[in-house]
Image (cartoon, rainbow, N blue to C red; front, side):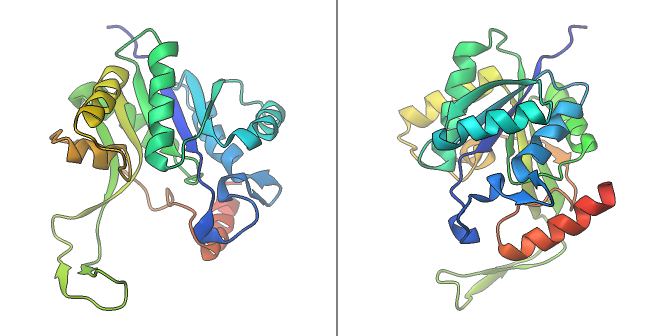
Length: 237
């Protein structure tokens, strides 16, 4: 059987407004290492990932290339300018790969740069589920019910935890599928979407197949998340 061509597309275009820090969170140096470098190393170390592409704020490209060279991330094959939103950045990355990668069946793992504790098992499961079922969305069962609110101050309903899952990244699709999703988004006038998996939902692509996530694969968003990251990172060392 033909071996799949597996590519990590890492989105590092965020400005980190919620963190209220001078440096975007993916570029923050925590305990001597840039968060982004830790994220990229997970894909660098995985034997089934062949290439890494990074969607990055243009003003950080020189620094990122220096850090990845020092960090021996030799799977990095391209740095792509970020867009004005997460959706625009993902779109830029997909369009770049569509021109660069000749294999339409290449498996693309789209991952948030600020989820640096992604495990090797998550990467393996994403590749396996995508090859078996045509796509893979990293997710965990919800252990909590959810309040429904319009203003963040009061709630007027709830969603029970049964039947709910919390999505993480990677979101994994063949390159041809991602290209088709972008084409359909253009045709339907979709300019914004929270993620690749929400775009798939808006386009009516179903079913989306679950690749089991991990609590450690959380997204660094608030200042308090740095403490969690430090604690979990120290357990890896």
